[in-house]
Image (cartoon, each protein chain N blue to C red):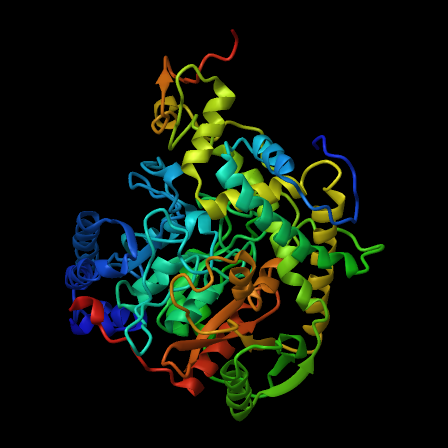
Length: 493
Length: 106
């Protein structure tokens, strides 16, 4: 393995600016690694030619002294972000062959900062899943295996993005997080995953799942890298009416290493009956690390926590059923027709052939809970409980700066282990969903290993637009945890 | 709003006919082989979310925005457009500068 693949984004940036390495060298090494890792199925579409061209241009710009801060640094782009001239599928058959005529704002921002996409990463279909088992383009494998060599899921929905970063393909990746789709897979793969405050990054040009919950964010090797990438991704965008018009701080500068006197909330409701002992043990360890660094632990209560998942499984399918109405065989993607069929037959046949099982399940649930007579009982009720969940956090943040919880209720599991029971799969997001409902930023930091040698993450949460405090705390947690394990590169055999 | 009977706050077990009715509203053709397992799954999910009924939400406003913000206004001016060929570039069928669909009026 080329040495440059083990660098962090910050190290690559510094080496490039000192002229110790060229972008062409970095990009070539990453393309080789990408091609050698096809067994992981991280990418739906690889774009090596475009990446090489961009690397040459970045080296030229640098030699002329007008290169942007991250010029020439390769990353992986989740296939939910529209890319001008490059197929964008959302891992769905219904969008196969869709070639957008524009870039997402986040993608454009990363390009302006100089970053170079290696290709489009695999995900759960329309980002609906927690194991990357619902992709039309096949499962992504976690670079981390069980001791007997059994493959494990990378988590989801940003499974291809996290697997790529964990395998050293790209110095970071884009993800989206609707109920945990950045943080849960980051936890499963020993990577850092940051979901920003709702409105921090533009949603324009990202295939919509549940619009009041969706938020783009970085997946990275380190907290510092996540800070650097977030700064490039974030910002106001008039094309997204929910993007918030406030300046983007220098997030890297927030990593002072000093959390003395900071108050860290410990919510009693996040101790789940029946959760593996090692999850609690890691949480205890996390508390000790932050206390050791000078923070003060404060017991808090978030009383409506247990209602977050059922609330989510009303709100998210409702919004999805509405958003996915646009896939009708008229403007893009798949069209299915039977001879002599009319327009409605075409819609129904296209959607039957184009959507996978989990997507159909959620569209049907969403259609049902929004239907007359049920709207008040389900959707309106869920939006009221959502207010109570947000109020829980608002009250807690009057007394604490950040909140520490486990990221996930378990380590990565084997393929098929939870796919027969939707609800047991949904429970994966039990610790991550509340932040989406309340619009708050959260981050998963690799912090330990399961008994079976798989990575485990701890999650930190902060008030809206508290990314600097969040990153400062996460950086200290990362230093204290000193997580340095890497998967064996079995896929290169 | 659609034509379902009103059973506010009650768990209704949905039957096969209702699954097909929902699928028809969602414009997804379902075979009987698909509809039958879905009936069980949807009922499980609906029974599970029913626990929200134990939360007292009297006087609680529904959340309408995940972040405190107000919508801005922009001048009502044409800011983009004029490229029909790009708009149609991904159409499964396009004719004479329009999206083409099967005949709607007999």
